[in-house]
Length: 164
Ligand code: FES
Image (tube, rainbow, N blue to C red; front, top):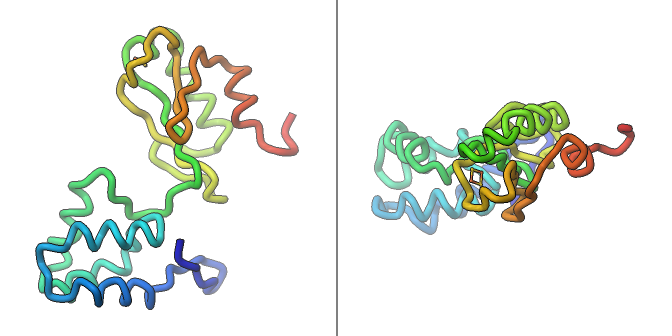
């Protein structure tokens, strides 16, 4: 991932690197999605500050670029955690305590659904049935399923250093 510059205590994306990527696609309207994917690969998300430059380079309006980013759920406008946690909210998991598992994960990580921890370790999401209902309730971390979840397992997975 591209380096971030520390400015005024806030990490700011290296927009010079964005410009380098944009230069490869200049004037190619059809290339909007590949360009957005490249930027996301580089930074882990699409810095909102880059939307104007991307639009100018491709001869589009910023609202058109923003519209595409909003439409594609795989494109993100905020930094993502190193690890993505998805708690299943399908029916089988729900009736076997999935709601409590989600609540506990939120408490452990200190974030709501769709948010990333301030240390950029975890992003928390929910997901529809992942197809292993027999193991409900389930959650997935970076593609690895953790079944038969219970409060103790949640604590084992997410108990941070220094916590009981
Ligand atoms: S409902 Fe959770 S795996 Fe099917």
